[in-house]
Image (cartoon, rainbow, N blue to C red; front, side):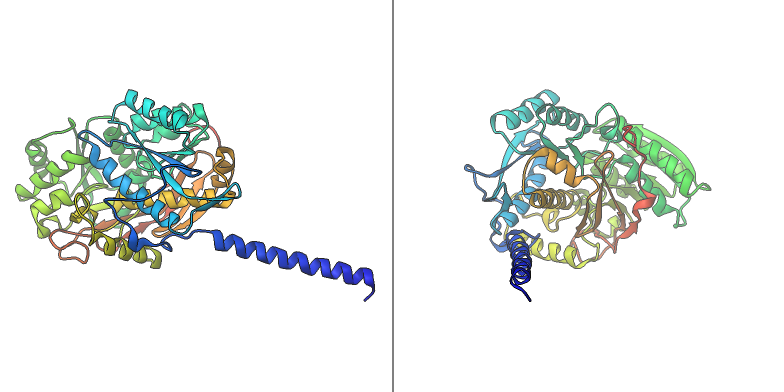
Length: 441
């Protein structure tokens, strides 16, 4: 080998070694979910930097007033993720290792207050990313603020289809929660393989309730055309007496109640139906709420059907690890996090945590909090979460994934005094994918 060839060969070897070293360093600096010092996480006193060169995430939720319970549970999920990532050293951003800082924006469930809180986070606190929020009407406000100030906004808990339509969608918006059509399509598909054929729709009388009912009827006609909607009723929000509706349902011979009721309406519906001696299944996103289930007692909750994207009974190694780590810490927690409601990272809490892991994985990959770089990387991305594969549809930034259904049973491995999950039935993504409605086809 002549001198010039030896030099070329040596240069090539050096380049390969350098690449391998760079890959090794990159992997060494990368965080992985559940690899941090989870044992030191204290739900009552989460620790994260409050100043300095950090990655700032602004969380918009109701942290005061009658809806503050939502802020409480989402704050727990984000604090968990931030602690996990920070205990691994943070994320390499713009050539520096940075930790996660969380800042609160109290929406008080009021659009005007939400706008002020979002603008304060964007302009005064100069957050890198906005996340939230409970209520479609508030999510629309956050969408507008995100577009105006070119901040990424991640919605992990509002479901309305209109959030990704031509009027409301913008490229800074990402939705990591399934929308109404996805939920109702998954539920209809689940019943396509079951014996029940007579359904009654009992929903709250506002936009979300009507949208859920209409999309379920369309999906049921597609997947189980021989089924019958024996009746539908839309009741006022915060209804105290469900007896007239439930008596009507009994008289019509319905085999399943389909509902999207949340909060106190779900509690009253579930509790009063069992007090009336009804055993008819109620199917919704919210019937695994422990508050009414503990009141009616374990056996009475058996047979209720819960719809969810993240359910603890999804049997994967990563999800089992998530459950084990969370539950071990839960045993140490005090008020308000020492109740059975927080025993497992179920439902909305689990989704919020997984959404934040995905978001921060994107930040890690691009090595930046620049909104345009995040948009480019996240569009069309596939991510392996503890409860299944996630796909970010590039046209409207809407999460697509399998959705799970679980029939509650008692006794069970999850909750000692109430009905809990059976093994989750996965509805494949292709059967609950909504059409693109924002014109970016």
